[in-house]
Image (tube, rainbow, N blue to C red; front, side):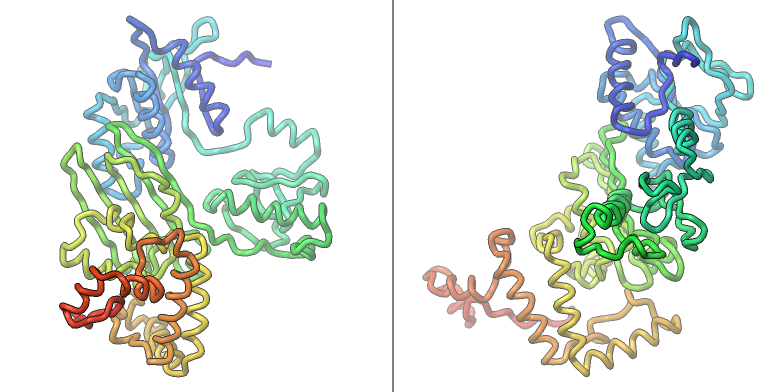
Length: 454
């Protein structure tokens, strides 16, 4: 077998990323050492390239020693044009170099160690480290292992609806599988949440391990259940920028795709060191379909933003009206404020289901929803354009919604201490300070003042 070349990496997992860090610390960093590092890829893998450059800078590699090479004429590592502009400017300010129209033709080596690269147009670049980010595929060792087991391989590992290969004792999952043609499932699984695919595989495996489980009968399914979990991408980029992008699963768009945006909410403060750019997309069904945040401030627990995706925009505290009127300087901070804490609760989706079922029992609301749906279906109006007047709750539905919300907040009061419930209002009434203040304005503690439409 051909001996691996030291200094050439194409990391696709944590173990390989750790190997890159070890090599950098031992062979790139050091007093008096100036070792150029080439990060290669395309716009499709551009975000990985920027994250790699950010990590190298964190390890101590000077930005001026990092070269991003790509075959594209225009490098667009981030889908959003404004976010891309901010990220590339920050990288350039760190000294990171960009080489366009650069397709690697040869990795030059000496004594089995990288010493440079030669591009297809004849240009030579000296370097001591090459990190390549290309389209994920099956490496030679894995392909031979699959071939030795006589597993069907058609560009991807072929599995049935229960994630079994042609050898029923071998299951496969992840973004390197595809469903057999007989399942009539042509989804590209690298576009879906891999953790959810893992859960589906576990459910299928459970049938064989424990036939009496709740997953009984799963092995006989002809199609994989819907894959609805949102997809998330996050990383630290050059210049100390933190990037988070969470978007809905392709399965959330039975007609159309992510590009069907009826509204885009944007806040942009590009002045460092407080750079903060936020963008929220609302689809034609009135749901949050995508969130993007790029800022210098670390974003703790960024994965929790997945709870916002596919929520009706009406859940977000009049976010459209407030953004349009300039009342929200930063959408990211607004969504992390105390008012939104309940949205991230792991049982909030249960409350949603209960409220929706309660409202559906109202004849008045059933008529309202049916009328609006016919308008949306005909293309006369987007759901995100529906106003509060169009969906004014009848008294019976309003009381059911209020009671359900109050019960949810009461049951989870230990985790949601910032919300006022009927029980807390009663307790506060006994407090002289609260009671005295309420009496002065002619209200009882817990009353909700009437507000105008504006």
